[in-house]
Length: 106
Image 1: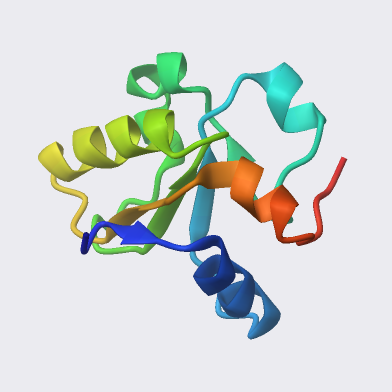
Image 2: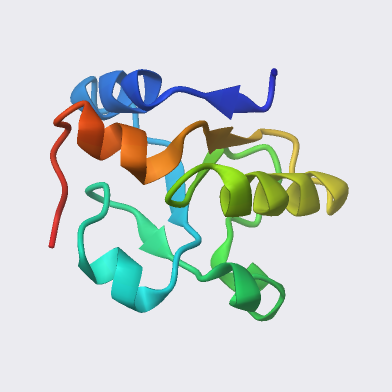
């Protein structure tokens, strides 16, 4: 799917310092257990109230993240419907990120 990226893709982008905006849509307690460096925590239930935290340019690259890719896919779809042209979800989410041994911030 053109609206999805793999954890390996996200890790390569971070390693290259080519940083998209990463929105972690998990709850704060989940976020605190370990998140991708530089990720912004906006829980899925608060996306509508936090649109002001997103870039003014709707073409800015955004990658959404959750545990499995389910919640983040919903947010990706919602933001796409709101006109964000370059939003993607990280498939398999933080479970796959962790399984691959990629670093997290706590």
